[in-house]
Length: 204
Ligand SMILES: [Zn+2]
Image (cartoon, rainbow, N blue to C red; front, side, top):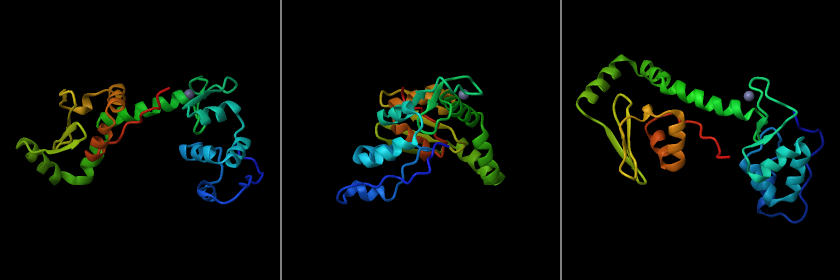
């Protein structure tokens, strides 16, 4: 742990909006998130208190720059040997990316639908098969994206340029990440269709 035992430094000067927020958020090195970055920009007292808790200067400057990872040559990952660490929590950046991809691949291989199926029970499946046969689907637009969700789980997306992806589960993890980066509204469509959102790494 990187936490020190000293008290967090108190803000100075008159009360203001960000200072008030500060009372609800202590500087914490174990999870450097966007909220703490906002506080750092708003309050130098908070920033210095946090800086004193973050052992690695490289990590702290990556955090202030909004960079997703920093390099820790002295601490290679025990699992993969990589030197990149996540700025957020110091975990291995490469393992983190792989994990996002693996989870998504598992989901694509049908783990999520299987769980769903046993929960809903056999009768519901029969009913959904019937609806699928009869061509029923739900349709909704998300910005310029159009999504159709079919009873057995197939998700069809028509992109703003008119390209139609008839079965989104055919996309690889990479393709899905690229599609979400290009069309952020795709996330809303996935959520609407009850899909697990794939992990989309910060672009570095
Ligand atoms: Zn690793």
